[in-house]
Length: 424
Image 1: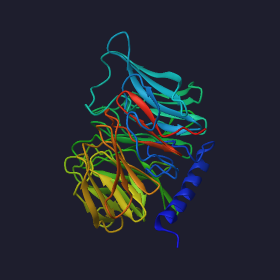
Image 2 (image 1 turned 180 degrees about the horizontal axis):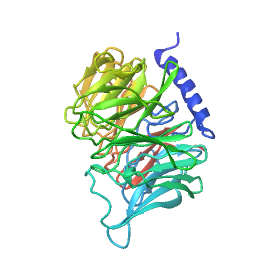
Image 3 (image 1 turned 90 degrees about the vertical axis):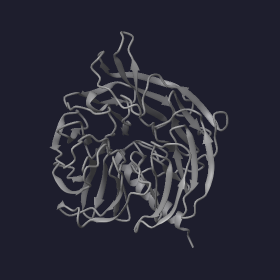
Image 4 (image 1 turned 180 degrees about the vertical axis):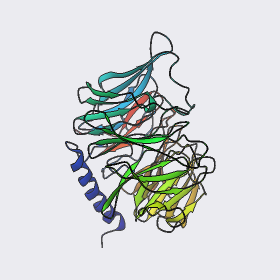
């Protein structure tokens, strides 16, 4: 009999193949956006490392200029990430995109996308940066997003195809959510201090295709979540959490299809996950919950479509991941949970080490967590708690992993690491 994990991996492989087909020119080992090819932290890579340290199982380590917490993405043997480098004229910032050779760690090009003059960039949270949204790769295009500071498209040679700087809003704590690509539109949320909205840009020109205001009961309007495109029956929905509510939007028009309210929840960060007909999503500060929501329908579904919810060890920042019949998540304070995805019944609830901002990933029947102290904790994907390894890079880390065959890419305060042996 085929094991549950092998069945799940075969199903995941089919999903990844379909998504890569839509993306064009990508390979099965690529990790083209925040949380990978499905956007949900799932990898079909093989020979993914379990053990590493600063001196063990490191293929290469490359110093990255400036500051940024965007996660690395991988496409066609190249890694892409963004960073904010102080300018020499005092107080300004150069917002840049870097491309690295995935086998050697060599920086192939380093392009300035935007320049922020001294004193014009609003302040950010101590756990944020001016380059936190993760790039997205589709075909020969690299989309980079710096929140209220601008969005752009580059080619694989680092040349800028277009720039979009007309979308102004008052940021709170800086930037966060990453863009997603839906057909020929680039979608992201603009949840600032007031008048939040969501928007779709034409992927080939950067022009605004549609823009939809967000009206919710939350008094604090700012949030930082990355949306997820799902197919619910015959209908596709863009699922975008914000302050006070998660909303579903029509990809073509931006019309709000439905919403589920969660009161005053704000500064929402986790990206939704969709499995077993349920959306798993966080509700933000001050008292986070994890909700399991049935999508579909029209209007306000708060009273009818919440399957289950929990406040126990719910995350403010890391996204969840679903493997087989279980959902795994970790609180910002470092308590990890494994629960039945359909019922919410908790299998285990265990303290890891340190605080957490990075979202976990799943590969080869394992869950990979990354603490803010740079400790990678590998846990068996099982209803029984089992730690397989603790791996210390001894450097601050808030970014999420990128995964490929035989390797992990980890961004720290000043470096990008390749763990494991590069492909020959």
